[in-house]
Each structure stands twice: as C-alpha cells, then as structure tokens.
Length: 371
Image 1 (cartoon, rainbow, N blue to C red):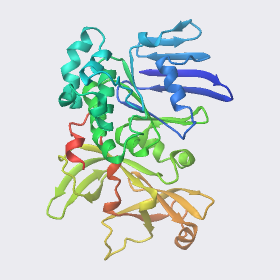
Image 2 (image 1 turned 90 degrees about the vertical axis):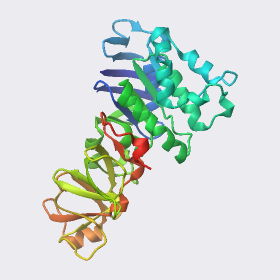
Image 3 (image 1 turned 120 degrees about the vertical axis):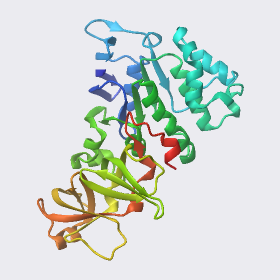
Image 4 (image 1 turned 120 degrees about the horizontal axis):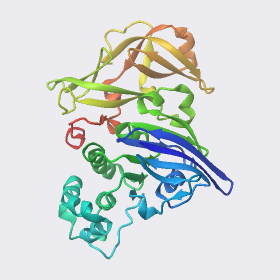
C-alpha cells in the first residue's frame, strides 16, 4: 500500500496531493507538463521535503510532519529511474549495476535481474557503446539491485523513439508481474498508461483531479479536458476468445460481446486491456449491412457531452461503455439523446496496438505476442 498526503509550496506553485494505491502493480501519475508529477515523485524519493503531510509504503513511514519523521533518501529503500539513464560513463555496465547493490539481497539478485532485463551481453560494455533503450534497461537494473520497497520511474521512455519504447515496455511489464515491486510511473503518454498501469492518478495544477482504475477514469467525460482531446476513448478489459489464422483475425470477448481485431499471436484465454479511441467509433440507428466494418454492437446512449466546437462526445453502453465522437449535425440527424438505442461501429484495424497490453498477473509475454 502506498499512502500519500502531502503539501508543498514551490514559489508560486502549490502542490497538494493525496491518494492511496493498493499493494503491487503500477500506479501511473498522468498530467500535462507543469501538473506537479515530478515534484510529487521527488517528495516520495526524499529529494525534496513536503511542508506538511505523510508518506508511507506498507508499514514503513517515510515522512510524517506531525510525528517528526523524515527519512533520508538513502534510508527510504526506493529505486529511482530518471528520464535519462544517468549511468556513470567511466564504468562498465557491470560496475554500474554493482554500484546500486545493497546488502546480500542485491548480490543474490544480480543474475536474476540481468536475465530479467536481458542485459547479460552488455556487462562489459561502457555506456557510450549502448543504445538509448539499453541504457534505460541498465538504469532500471541498477535501481532494482538496491532492493527497493518501491520503484519510482519518472518518464523513463520520454527520450526514446517509438522503436526503443517498444523494446523497453515488455521489460517494465515483467518487473510488474515477476518481481511484484510496486511502481509509481510518471508519464504523459496515454498508450503507456493503458498498457502498463493498474491505478491512475490524474494531476492538474498541482492537485490530484481523480484517482481510480484506468478503465473507470478513461470512460469519464468530465475528465476529458485532462485525459486529452486526441487520446480520448474507452479502455476495455477483454479475453482472447480464439483466432481465425486464415482470415488473420483474433476474437476478443468482453461482457457477452466479441470484438474482432487483426490477428495477434496471443494464447487463448489471456486477459488483455485495449483502447478504442472515440474518433474511431461511428453510430447508427440500425445495424448496417454490406459494410466492411466488422464490429457492430447494439447499445444504448447513456451520456452526451457538448465539446463546444461542433463535436459531441457520446457514451454508449454495449455491455461495456464505449465512447464515440460525432458532429453536432450527426447527432441532430440521428436525434440522439440519453436512452436512444443505437449501434456502435468499430473498425477492426482501428484498435490501438501500441497500448495493447496484458493485465496484471497474466502469463502472456507481451514482447513475444504483440508486434
């Protein structure tokens, strides 16, 4: 359990953040630049001191202004992975990793961490001979060898291109699932949140705007200004129901429905999380025929929000809540209102592959199954 309730004034900026996160998994801090994400992580790490409040991880109190507790950073047993690897340039990878080791646990875990992050072939190299993705894997390894009770990751993929991000994401999934170390993960990339996170903390202007499971927060229209106009959409938990290899299609089941997507080499029965962007969903009053769109879900309109720019956001309950974005003209022509019966149309190829990820505890190895 991560408990945070802190206040800190930094010049004209006031940080006031409170949330509790359940044990294990990844808690993502999301918000625009300047929202206070890094400032909050630095308070957790002990690199800055709250004016007042309390920080605790499980039974360990790291900071409590009333009790006079303020553990030094080196006493908090936290691992910190920065946006840049910050490796020692004059040391080999092996020595960089060894620098982070603490006690017998670190030494005992060396081989396991090296294997988990697939950096065995890098041990005798120096940082200048590593790619950006390799440097970050080594930085993660160094943080883990400190035997942390909590791992802090501050936008660890922000400086990497899409190819390097795709290289690192499966390793972060492994940390979550195989080491069971709780992670606080700072990012402004929604695809990383959908793929990795269990809990989402949305920050705005130094305050926590919302806390909850990713699926719940991403379907809330009131959070649209904070989750992003372009990124808006529903997040669903689905189960791989089967494959049609000849037609290159995979069936995903959710709430009594079947979603057809391009073929994924993923074992049947695996539980995944997917994102369907609002801009990729169309609405019809009757089920269309002779159409290339494979996914047509009957449902009922439960909420409509006016974006004030000629477009409307519509939440449709099809068993799960799906988010559609239509023009005001389209809404008027269809006479849409809460309670209207409609069909939600989703193109199979519109599914966001970059954010497709396995749920916590799944045995599926995402790096082998998702291109």
